[in-house]
Amino acid sequence: MPAFDFSEQTLVGNDFSGQNLNGSTFFKATLTNVLFVNTGLRSTNFEEAKLYNVNASGAIFAPNNNFPQAANLFKATLENVNLSGANLRQANLSLVNTKDINLSNANLTNANLQEANLSGEQSERPNLAGANFTGANLFKAKLKAADLTGAKLVNANLEEADLEATLLINVDATGADFTNSNFTDVTLQNSIFDLANLSGVSLTDAQLEPGQTANLKFRGANLSNFLVEDAVLTDADFSPSGSTVTNLTAARFVDTNLSGANFTQANAEGIFLDDTDLTGANFTGANLTEGNLKATNLTGANLTNVNLTGGDLTEVVANNTNFTNTNLTNTILSKGDFTNANFTTADLSGVKMTDAIAVNANFTNANLTNGDLSKVNFTDATFIGANLTGAIAVDAIGLTLGTSSNDTINGTSVKDNIFGFDGNDTLTGAGGNDYLDGGAGADNLNGGDGNDYLSGGSGNDVLTGEAGADTLIGGAGNDNLNGGGGTDTLIGGAGNDTMNGGAGNDTFIFASGFGSDRINGFADGADKIDLTAFRTNNPSFGFGSLTVTQNGANTVISSSVFGTDTITLANFTASNVDATDFVF
Image (cartoon, rainbow, N blue to C red; front, side):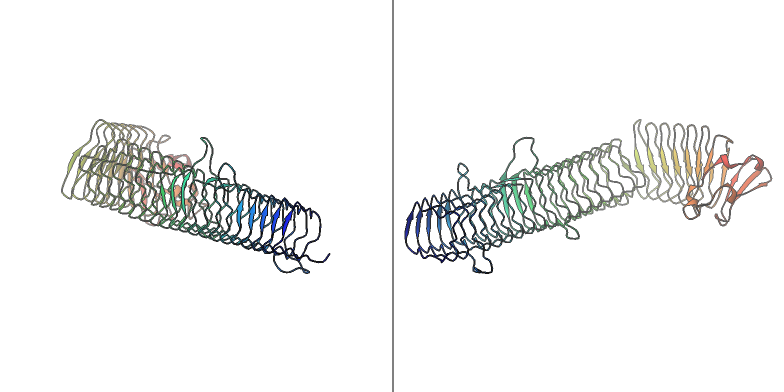
């Protein structure tokens, strides 16, 4: 069928359904109540045409070999036009002006909708549900209140687009460019923004019904300078897309619900998360350098291996939060609640933690050098192996720090953490399950009652566990370890140490370079010598690897694996030594 020229004509009630109008022109025509259902409209020209109550569902505007030119609807006016299921691939719809448009399930792949007006009101939403905008140009497009449920925006250009009050539910916007677009009052749920560019985007007032989760994916997306305020982004995923990490540099989240969100490995340097709900969020391996997390709720969050250098966590709630191996150098933790938080092996050097709560927190092997821990409540906190050199803890509860002089510090009836530092210190735990760290110098540590942990540090120290199941670590130097009552663990460390487990079934642990140690009062059938450390590089190491000899009243245990180091069991018969006395 030949092409028709309807330029500047007025068409009312025409039925072109199923016809072939490929190549026809409707330039500046006015069409009212016209039907184009399943009509061939390839390479047609509707530039500046006015379409009222037109039904073009299933119409084909896409070019082919015979009609290679894209359909042109430039500056057309479309009121109450039905283009559902239409194929508008590569069509030019730039500067179109629409009202009550229906583009549901239409194919607009690589279409040009630059500055197109597809806006409406929430009471009469433009219907773009299920439409395919893959690769489409929607630069500065007006999409106010549009229903984009199930739409596809893969690699689409939505720079500076107006998305106010739109429905973005089950949308795939992978690789789309939303730079400087407006997301005010949108509904965001179950949508994918992987590898998308949302740099400079403003997202405000994005709420959901109570109990609903956002479940959004921003994997590998560019969210630098992203601004979010008063939004629900629960369970959002900001983890990498393949090798591409998500960029959240200088992003701002204010009064936003990000509970359960995944920020694994995200680059969020300078991020602002003020007064934000991050309950149960996962930040494993993320870069939050100089991040502002003031007054956020991090309850149950995972910040393992996170870089928070120079961050601000003032008044944060971080109950049961995992900061294992996190870098918190020079970070502010003042007035925060870190009850049951885990700071194992974390770097808190130079930290400011004044007036915080850290009840039952775990600082095992953490670095707290030069930290300000004044007025912190460390009740029942654990500091085993922690480094507090240069730290101050004025009026702290549950933590007492000595000086470089010879200190005498007595604990209380509850759990104490006492550090002697330099000097020949005398530290007494008294009641409770105490941790005593002698530091440098020839120290005298007495745990008293309770299950205590005593670390001599460097110097020739005397450690006495007294009652309870105690752990005694001599450290460097020729130390004297006395377990006392209870089932104790004694580790002499480097140097020639003398150990006595006392009453109870005690364990003596040895590792490479332990020296020439002596065990007094070794109880055959009760006490154990733990040599498991030597199996690391010697899988076959066992009782047969040992040489047991009688030397006067004593038994000497040696091995080629020990080098020149030996274990002497004082006043013990060599023939009574067998494999049951060891742990391998």
